[in-house]
Length: 177
Image 1 (cartoon, rainbow, N blue to C red):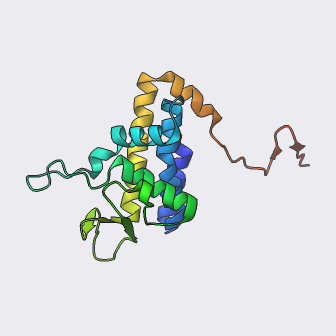
Image 2 (cartoon, rainbow, N blue to C red):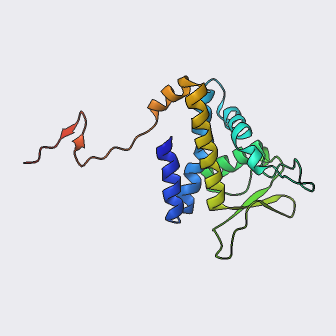
């Protein structure tokens, strides 16, 4: 999983916001599949989000106590809208409390993250959102290492992009003189 987390972080450094967001939105998919392979995609995505990320998007303090800015349903709706159609608006069947997402690049004057606009549009700062997912993902991997060795074993099936400078194992062998 670390290679995916690092890919997101490198994309953030390079200001490749779409690459960072695309990969970040797949983390709950990947982790959910490893943790609960018997569940359907939407169920496991939302369950993983609730357990590992929802608290980050739940308001704290007297005025906001318990207010969920980004629910599991809305995050899954964003994932579907963005990864399947490149959109930020939630389809009718995916709407829970939000209608739309408004992502911004990091402003040069500070940050602007987790703001509600007109009661149904959630404004997110793309780097912060992706960093939140990476942090939750790393916490999940730490938990899996100590509690669920079966998950760690399943991670062997993750895609790995090989360096072909020294050949391709089993296909091409390069000999240098």
